[in-house]
Amino acid sequence: MRVNTPLSYHGIMFHQSYFGVSAVMRVADASGTEILHDGVALEWTTSDKIFNYGHTTLPDGTVLYVVEAASGQVGTGIEPGQVRVELYAGEATTPSAEAILDQGEPSVVGDYTLAFEREQQFTGMIVRRDPGAPVVWVGFGLLAIGVCMTMFFPHRRIWVRVTDADDGALVQLASPDRRDFGFSAFFTDMAVRLSGRMTQHAERNDVDA
Image 1 (cartoon, one colour):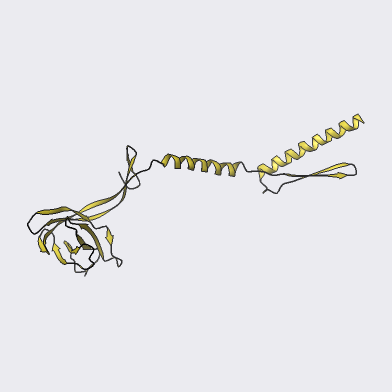
Image 2 (cartoon, rainbow, N blue to C red; image 1 turned 60 degrees about the vertical axis):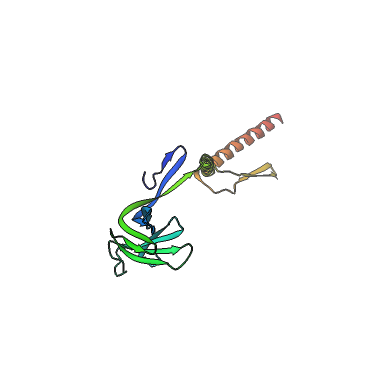
């Protein structure tokens, strides 16, 4: 499975939407029990493009933020091989504890022992099931057919005016439609055939008279 090449399984579509770097973190509580050992996807970037960051929620509701310097950024206070961690209690906007972690060196931060183990790749997935897709494709097909019919089989209008004349009737043909080669040929052919029919009718009437 690749970007723009979704995987289908029993009507469920798996799309690889994006990918990036995650920080593998190990977190233990005050008793030494491991409560997290997983990658934290650093999928967001600050508005000034200096830091990449991501977050996860620990079992007790504490939110752990992991921050690293964006690619090519220097002088940020976070060196290569380091991450900054911030702990937030619930929906608090001020961290209850924060620290800079060196890769592979556990450190006590607040009530937890945190270790930054390594970086690894992550991918963002979109998983969806769309039972209405066939209806959409049918509608798209009808739309395409309608466009083709409009372009290649245009609606044509012809105005006919018949007025009395001294020697019979005057028939005038006109069309308000845009002139094109196909319509011009059709219009000319119809005018010639109509003229021939009228001539035949006039000759027949002269013979009968």
